[in-house]
Length: 363
Image (cartoon, rainbow, N blue to C red; front, top):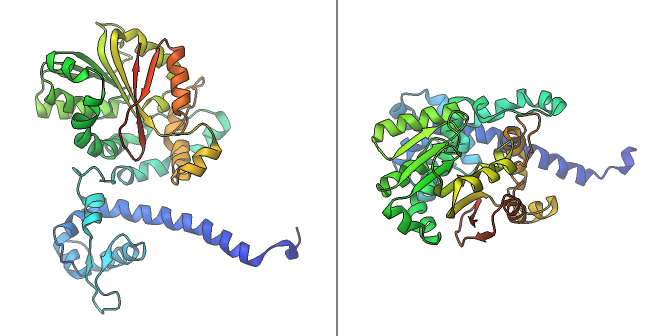
């Protein structure tokens, strides 16, 4: 390659593109710090704004560090500034920023992935060996904070929309739950879905299954705090899903693509479901090819990267793992696998979600 073959303008643009990714990674770290230190929450309580000095004083932090963090946040257009030319600028969060950064009950709350960012990025230390051996790492490799991060990522939407929108969209399920049904929450994580359903439908029985000990510990702590008698959590390696009475409803939220043996799990779900039962399959929106994912999903690069560090790593954490990964379960792939597992009905539900697709699957 000669120097004459290099377009200097194209070189500048390529370099800019590469380093813009580094800027995003570093700013993501700053968002993690803002969440961890409670800076966003503190700013949300002062809608008129703070100087770096007043914010640092309220948080008992060193002003110089807070000031530099604020400068990053303003440059990244996350925190707003009333007069950037002022000697002592006033910084504030817009109402929209407060929803995303500082309101855990809002469906747009987005701090889950940033909460577990250090654990996710620490996986980079393990990746070279995984690339050589083919063996990934399960979710417990991310530690207890990994389980909390998953909880914070998905529960805000579920807590707001599961009962009023998703349950009524499932044919006959609301009536069954009100009368008394058996429900399995496979891949229950920290238990938020089971606890929400248990509170709402006291006549029904809910069993949450997960192989993550960190997630189960968190779920059981929350269960003890709530005192619900119709919910419990267990590891399917100690208590098989197929051991007891069959279920009226089985839910899998954002977990099939993470499993080492999703084909086997779908067969287990069919075996464990009553003949008039329902499987609520919720998984990442995906298309059938790299071309379509790149063309139709502006977050495709993020999702493929998270797949390497987390989802596909989990799905390849045994030597014979199928390795679907984050974008590995498109609607057509899910339908094909469900049919092979013995299901005859597969329907996309009209549920709007920025990341997930919702399917009603029946025997």
